[in-house]
Length: 247
Image 1 (cartoon, rainbow, N blue to C red):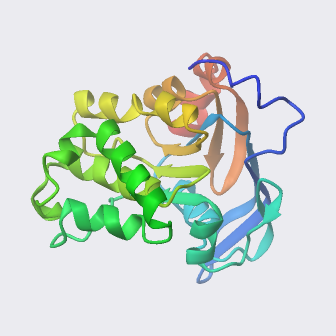
Image 2: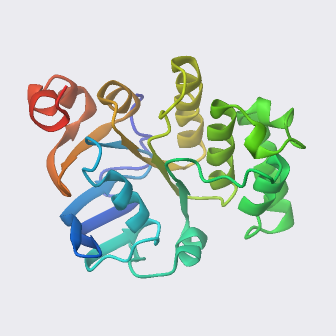
Image 3: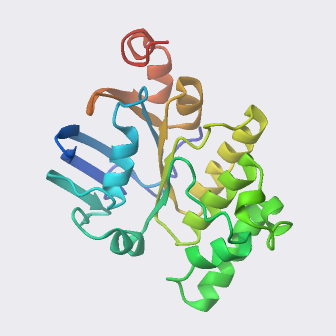
């Protein structure tokens, strides 16, 4: 990855801070005092095996699961405990695992849904940007989401989230079920998003993909951060593979 834009210096307010967050689902503690930071202009990957807590982390940030304790700040503004729609309005875009599209709605419908919080002029600007970023969607505007290929559905899920005009984008395992060529095309959008001022928090199970795409990375195991550092350094750390990802 390229260096973080110098206009976002070390003293800048972080894009996202997760501080000592605990999330429980029923009787189970899924996140256990987890803390991490995403700087403005960064791509940060959260790595971990299935069940480590990656999806719960992103859903907690997005307001789908309320944390039992801890703080979440978006550019210094506390957002923990707010309803999901308010967190979206504050500037968090969320691309869930499984994409969660509406199979009977068209591509155009999904873009319209994503942009409904923005003024008409901004909505039109965002739509044009999405169609430039994902040209295949422009050829599928009238097509139902359920009839798209897996790669096209992933692009639509990302475009829908970006239509909310986020400052931070949460991507939950975007490579799942996709051919390598399609995965590459999705990850190649990251530099464009950085240029547009979007910081990215990526949850990935794939060690290679996650570290290749990121500036920094965190390894989560049983709801806790167990390793963190520059992506290039973690790629050389045998503990990531041997102990925490089991590969």
